[in-house]
Length: 504
Image (cartoon, rainbow, N blue to C red; front, side, top):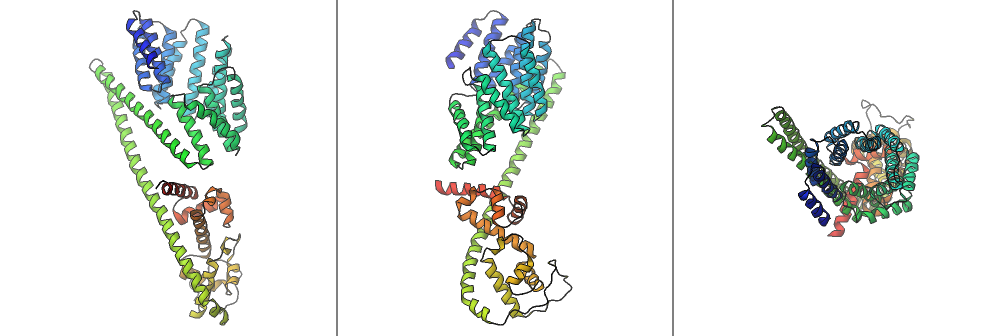
């Protein structure tokens, strides 16, 4: 790559005409793009743009503007990307050679398809893909170029239909893309197809088939420096290793993705600052551009301030989550000690309680709703102690995981009536019957997740059913109410804690 860049630079130095200088600059820009150095790629393209602006070379202009549209899109500078696309398309309208005009329009339509997909306008993206294909169909091209253009369009269709959750259509288009690309060496587009198919097979729990495409991507990732492609490949591969619980791989890929994102952000800021500096110099000549500078500076300042505020709040949120997680584990340890103590107590006093007189009762109530607080509860201390003993015995079992567990069932278990039982639960547990049962169930699941790594592999639906909840959503809501976090986040933090313990 260094040798090629040196040659391209030499060509620029010895070039005597604007056209030759432009070609050497764009050759260097393309080489920097392939090496992942988007900053230098854009700077050289902008240099070429200044030279070509004084010519009537519409084909060259369209190519340069299209190149810039792509680079700005990759960096997330969407307004600049769309601006260059619009300029490029307008210039392509003035290209006299119809074949070149249609080819350029097709490529620009592809670029707009990528742009709209990045903006999550998936149906709009599909519209541009079809327009691009219609332009390509109107001209004759070499088999290799035809395969590449068709494969790219099919890959884009697959991506958009996948985002629209139409898996069958997405898979069909990805497979069509592979058919188009099979006659040419593996490239950027092929890897995007591998990524798409891997995502589909992971959604279908077909991990062996997903692994096949993950392996193909990993092989190619060693050869490419393209930041956009690496970001896609790392994201897909990270998801696969999360599913297969290979946390070392997940951690490694997360670091690589963060590095790429940081690189793209740094390059975006550099481009913004570079643009701002140029505008400031030209401000001495044109007063209008001064207003642009101020606006751009304001936007950059707001962006930096916004990013700083977001980072501060994010860090605070993370600290609160970690603190909450530690509190949950601490309460779990305290419950375990209490459980051991209560088991010993039950063993000691159980026989004595069972041999005493039965619990004082009132006529059984059919309705399980709360009793009015205005009605006085007359209960001896002995009766209250016996009910508490039976509740402790109940808590040390797993009967609370029964589905459709009712107040009547627990009253019968405690040899008492609904009213007495509700009174004791409200007085000693500080909650009503249903919240009391929910707390026992969530504590049971927390204990198992903490002490049994196999439990962390189970789906949320299985955990919900295990402890008697009617649905995964109900389980998740109650779990968050009791712990302050969703079960998936709790499991993730347990994985990270386990990993840190292994490291140390």
